[in-house]
Amino acid sequence: MTVRLACDAAGIRTAVEALRNEQIVAVPTETVYGLAGRADSNVAVQRIYEAKGRPPHNPLIVHVTSLHWAAKLGHFSPKALELAGRYWPGPLTLVVPLVLNSGLADAVTAGLDTVALRMPDHAVIRSLLNQLRHPLAAPSANSSGSISPTTASHALRSLRDRIPFIVDGGSCATGLESTILAVIDDQVRLLRPGVIDLGLELEQTTAIEAPGQLLRHYAPRKPLRLDARDSRNDEFLIGFGSMPCDYNLSPRAVLTEAAARLFAAMHEADESNRPRIAVAPVPKVGAGLAINDRLARAAQATSTLR
Ligand code: TXA
Ligand code: MG
Image (cartoon, rainbow, N blue to C red; front, side, top):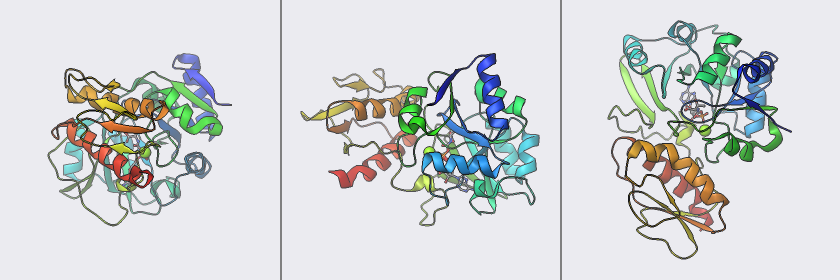
């Protein structure tokens, strides 16, 4: 049985104790719920991969609360420092060269010579980090390949009893996973779009540099049709802007609101009694770029189900 902890002092204390003892704990962040474990512990990191059923070649993001901490794990070029200074804490992950003898468990970086680092902007994971005093590896708290969780219930539905604890911190404000940028020297490449949009084109790579780019990702269990203007009778319609539908991402057509509600909409569509999902067009600007990225992957991944 997974124990659901409140995000009060007692809940945080229990979570810190569990993490210290190399257990894994699902925790809220401002983007999505993460499945956290000590990034310096092979045992904890192995537990994360096992609970998610995550392929071992897909590395994890390491979470910290200070740049000082981050710089012990990764090499920050002036460009990387500038980006961290501008967007941290917040929904931005920086992939930078790994420091030799960083102390991170090998599986965290899946043998790459780079490390993905993020300073989250959420009181719960920040107090866990500050009390624990170890960096936390945390992928999204869902079984590998399925939709990321933006509530504790989503995470529990996906991971069932495969995790001992979850801290319930309500809904995640941002709702989409962080933007991932690779920053080597002064070169910046976009590996995963998110709500922080620097106007970069998504890197088209065949290598598994960011397996977030893998097709079977963010996938509901049902076929999903894009750019739907209305629903066919067996579809659950996810709308955008003023329109009749089963779940409206944002009746006033606000993209950041739609981003925050996208995964909740997909979870609800998956749980509904309709066998198919349709999604209305969402403008491809700002946060809409990240929304369309997730939708395209979900539609691709489910195309074989049609
Ligand atoms: O918002 C987020 O980023 C959430 C919260 C919990 O922080 N985490 C998250 O983790 O989305 P995850 O594991 O679902 O996605 C991490 C992505 C994966 O696509 C992984 O391949 C990529 O980051 N990644 C990790 N380390 C990398 C590296 N060294 N180089 C390239 N990509 C890396
Ligand atoms: Mg994920």
